[in-house]
Image (cartoon, rainbow over all chains, first blue to last red; front, side, top):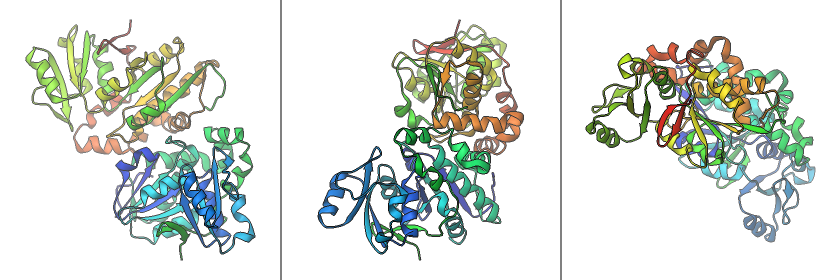
Length: 246
Length: 246
């Protein structure tokens, strides 16, 4: 996967803590938080919601709720008292949400979106379910690519890094010399992906996050989150909200 | 490599930035900086130096030099003006150094040693050249293990993570249920090691750091740094200096 040629670089940032090192101007930032924020956001746009407003604090969610917005949100796997539903992707697939704006409160995802949105960057949301769409967009976009792994409480997360690796490997493979990467974390991600790709779910069984999800009784969403290319939407962050890239 | 059983945990900290998350009390911390600080320190003790005093700033090195100490140190691959020699492991193998105390100035390594030394931790230095000795010590030591990768300017580094993976994989394999790990970065490291172990040098060719070393004309040390188990010394940090563990 290592490649020194190509006009545009690919980097993978394993943890929000490392963002100050990886930050660039005018880059395409692909944020991923496979379990579950980024998968849920892609599911929502696949279900044709109008917009998602990402928020970080409970009081922000409460303010929006008072104004009549539909609110989604959890803390440690439990639906917030002020929210209509939690952050499972299945919740965002309700046909009643079509055309609606949803306020979404997530532990890791929201902070990541706000952090990376500066410096003329284009911030999009990536997940296994829209991988191919993200690849095509990056190939047609004359920018460096940074994959931002939201991680788990600022730690390296296996599933986010595997998504990063799938993206790195596919961009190098299909990019026909457009991209280069000499970034160790990008190369490591692609290596992990090569080990996992033939049995992604089996591989994730090894990862701590699955263990945590199981404890919280959330592992019903794992197969959905690990299925590739079930949607072609690309959520993009514009004017403090996520909309579907046209 | 994933294992939920065993009294003692194994964690891998990919970057000094993540240390606040991984910090524990009474742990065995294995610091690694394969290219080249940790390899050079092991080489020095293999050559029977008495002690190494790790320092971080140039003025500290200058102070020790004025007091008559032998000083080693570099910045960006160039020997410091006040130093007798640079940080290549070959420099530390000079027979004239036997029984001597050396002041060592390193960009990443020193900071790592000082950072992890608190909280009743035992801090030792690990490299491919003393891997087996570190494994045996960890197996006989009733502590949790944290592998601290010094990295490259606070980034994830391929070679340090591969050493971490070799250590994780061997401890789980030989530990007979003593160790557990549900740490994603430990599991990822072990996966990377499984990809690299049959051709470590070829694998490192892919890594950015080799590219950097090559640019600096330092790649003569790569084969030495990647050879396994050429020494059985274990450098340990005690009273602000490194000595050989008895």
